[in-house]
Length: 400
Image 1 (tube, rainbow, N blue to C red):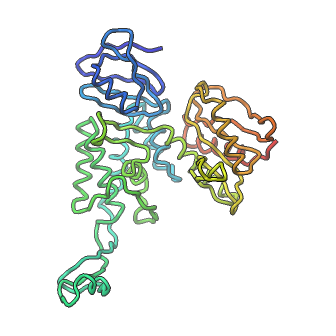
Image 2 (cartoon, helix red, strand yellow; image 1 turned 135 degrees about the vertical axis):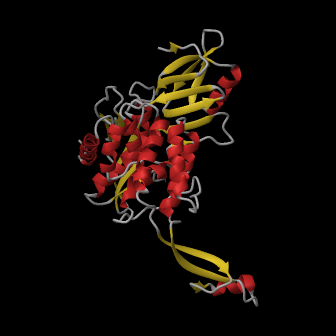
Image 3 (cartoon, rainbow, N blue to C red; image 1 turned 60 degrees about the horizontal axis):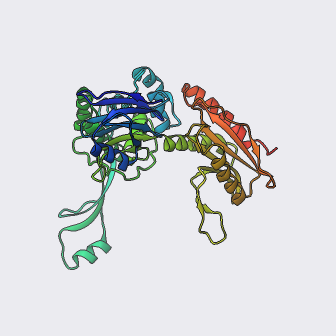
């Protein structure tokens, strides 16, 4: 049931995901919220009020003088762990205590990034060899003869060179610098903003990593292992795979976690760890086609393969079991996956949001069993690991 809140001078409102609140806003702000689509907006019975309903995104939305804080159902520290999943969970155990009962994902992310960033840059930023390709007037490194001839035929100087320099401008520092700058600009806490600015200044001379560009996989050694947790967060921020930042196309500003994406990517990563230990390979979002003309595309969330033979298909659903899509539309989708991949069994994995999940279903005249199960993501990191281990057993069980 919607709760009515009268706007005060702060114009701040808080609601949980999938919940609604009635707030007093003008028609332009309401139209902007509706157009961006992060929340659903409908006129309320009270004059000047609109009913705002949260969807599957959590975080902070700002439109003019109105701020919406959408609180996740799981603890914020757990959300950050899921979103920036890393096989090494030790760095997150102390963070659970540090963040406590924080319910603001933006401030929590800023706290986590500052905390792990300070640990990463202590005592000094790491250095490494960086390859440069540029034209110079003094000879060093390797001369790029093909480029020299194509660009400067008959000209002796400058010379096109490739050389390695030992410096701080390594990828790890570049990614961290971009993440510090992004979060620094959007955190509402001046003290946190100053901490992040100080970290960014410590990387003076480091070229920022381009926002939105994919971050390469890092090989961790004793030299850069202290960067592990901070880079997990920074990758999340820089690649924007689970966050949506303000840009010129938006009518307001958003700093949001897409819980659908967070849950899907976590399930994929953990099942890769659990299933590939048994052999084969796990693939996320592998595209295939239902029809022979290759016009009906489909991308199951997770598939497990042995060579060209599909062993299992799993679809992750971050939604309430009371939604209109459960179980009909989800079962239809899984039946299509199993039909295309030649499987007698498919697994639907729902986030445990407090709903009752139905037992498995066998489709009439098809001989396909659709298993439905829930994954509790609210417990400790050890509990999460145990839950995924149990899920892997469900996935590998033979069809009944």
